[in-house]
Length: 149
Image (tube, rainbow, N blue to C red; front, side, top):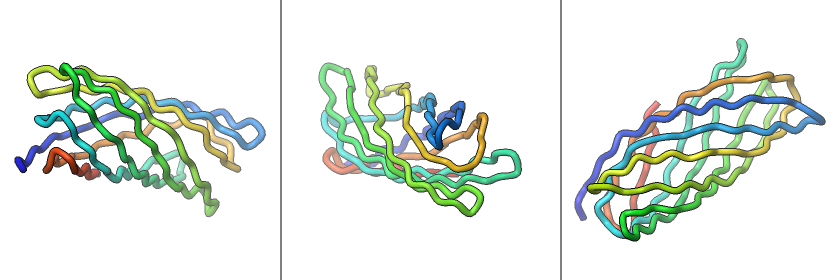
C-alpha cells in the first residue's frame, strides 16, 4: 500500500559482429531500487533511442519479472522482448535477462548482464546506448516500472 520511488540508470554497451545475418549482443545494466516487501511482482516497459552512425535505432522492450526476497538476497529472472527498426528494415528480437542481488537496509544495488541474439541486414561494428528509467513500487504483489528518457 505504501508508495515507493526509485530512480534507476544504467549503461548498455554492446559490440556487434555480423556473421551470416546473426549478431550477438552483450551489455551491463546497473541500477538502484528500494524494496520493503518480501515479495514483489511487477512489469515495466523500457524504451530508449540509440544513435549509430547517422542511423537511429529505437528500441522498446517489455520487462516482467518476479522478485522474492529471502534473507536480504534477491534472485530473479526476466524475459525481454522488443522490436527494432533499422534503415526501413524491421527485426524482432527476444532475450532472457537473469541476475542476482543482495539487499541491505531495504536498499539494493543491482548489477546484471544482458546477452541476446539479433538478426540484422546491415553492417554494424559497435554501438553504445544509455538506459535510464524510474520505477514506482505500489503493492507488495503488483509493482510497476516506467522508463524516463
